[in-house]
Image 1: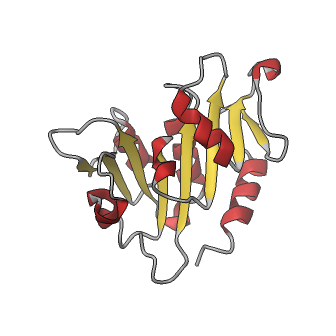
Image 2 (image 1 turned 45 degrees about the vertical axis):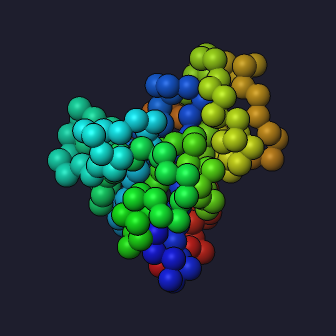
Length: 187
């Protein structure tokens, strides 16, 4: 990530369970902030096509990386995060010129310190993955579906909870909050 200017913005979107809407929320952020020319990285636990780092070039709807490009991402990467030394990680090297980076991952929090961390609860009916607890501790906001059962949502009182009817279209309230969090960083 382009660290020379000190103006790098990093967002991490983590999820409580598989299929809670992380990719949809990222597509909503991309559509709401197209002027930032985001690079989006989906972190996986296994190599794709035999390589730990793979870049998508075709927008579409078949894979998450295709969806990122279709929603407006400048670049979309799929990365296996297995290198214990982040300073020499192929992913870190690939991101060295990128200014605005959005990660879809719970585990990336062990490697990067985001400017914004968003935890996606979805409808909050699934058991919570253990990898989500660091996201809950770090999160600046939580997102859930508009019809999520409020009694099942356990969260910190010091962060906002955005209830969205569609994760692909973030609310004006969430967009205003996100712009305020990113404002000092965006050039």
